[in-house]
Length: 594
Image 1 (cartoon, rainbow, N blue to C red):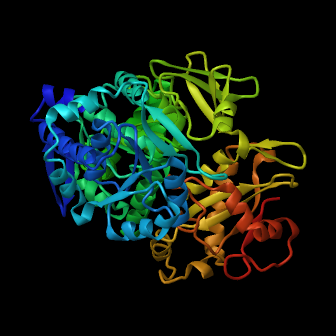
Image 2 (cartoon, rainbow, N blue to C red):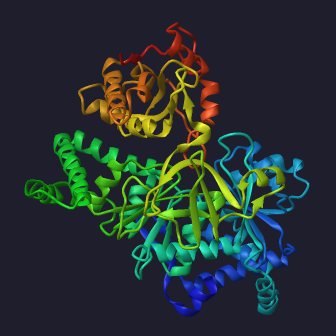
């Protein structure tokens, strides 16, 4: 793909990196030259064709260069999340039998060095910030073009391209082996399904971890289609990067869109324009719903035009002024957010896929957006629903096998169909809607099946809410564990005349905070039946994060870990007795709906 891009448009910028508020770009021809130089270094280092080489780095341009260089040299890349603990790194490097690793920083090198005695296969390592890539280029200066070309020519579509370890919400991560033709075929199908997104002149900003299959897929698709890709390693600088890079489309998990919306609302509150913003947001949602219905009343159209000048235009400017599309995956996106962003001029194309399907298996089409769904299958992919409601997939995107795990590979398939573990339904047009995850389905004491995701997503729409875990397995009613968004808390307090210095621990017991969370629960309950509704909640004096071990790198809840660590809080909800929790003091703030 890279060779074809460099041959067809050698002077087109394809990669970019930020320097403060400015960006430097690298053309397709320059990218190919850099990739070949690094690839020659890998050859000179004695790495045999098919050897496994790990990459541990934040999202930056060098990640993409190394990835393509490994493929040029006939090697297999093994991505490792930069936030992984030494134990997690040890498992991935050991299980994958990685013989070398490229890391970003000296801290990463020290992390690897601390576990190196347990890794007999691991030999060489290079540090990006320590000039490691330049060292590789110098090392490979004596490798001829013909020698590298021979290595590249020996790589075929059915060969292994990468081993991506699943996030591991339960148990040890499994190494998912994806072939080169998984990427090429999926890119071809996705480009056909989203021509508007990857049209000439398009650009995107990568900020989700490159170790995630979603980011890898977008990087490969962008090289294939000539999309300019910027890289942002620090999500705290995301809005600054977006406003200066000015992408035409974004890709993100739903939590990012929630953060963008909630931050805009909070900024409006602090500026005394909270009511205006909320009126504009309600109008945006109503307008999009009316567009879907095929008729926009005159009064609504007039309000929409007014708010477009007062509010929506400013939001578009904050996103760089050129963003017209966004691709969302890895978790369900609230229909309310989809409607809101469509009205401000950003069409979110929600899709569905897993590591095992090389990212997307389905995606919404810009010309036929079905908000609330994840769209129809990509070309070359088939989707069907099993008798028990499980989503089954087969086609060009489906992975080859789990590394060193024949038992898991066998259980992942049924009659040639990949068993996703997710539940869903297909309409008459073949459009898929995901309704939950089979393993997460809660069965209450009365036998009611409850999918936690819709409730959790609904409650999390409130700007004050960080994370939500719905509970109730074998219990008389459904309840929830809630955490506060500690970044949003000070601004939320200030806009309501509460001291912004209110500590998170004290906030969990503050009546005004409890009332706000109750409002969020009530709003979410309004979308489900009474039997499925959250009757009680507790606010944890804790922050569920990847660092705490409660979130995966793609920001999904490790449900089993949360239920283990906060078992006392769950028991407190159902018993009413005061207990000491695993977070600081006893959590007092509990509300119950009758």
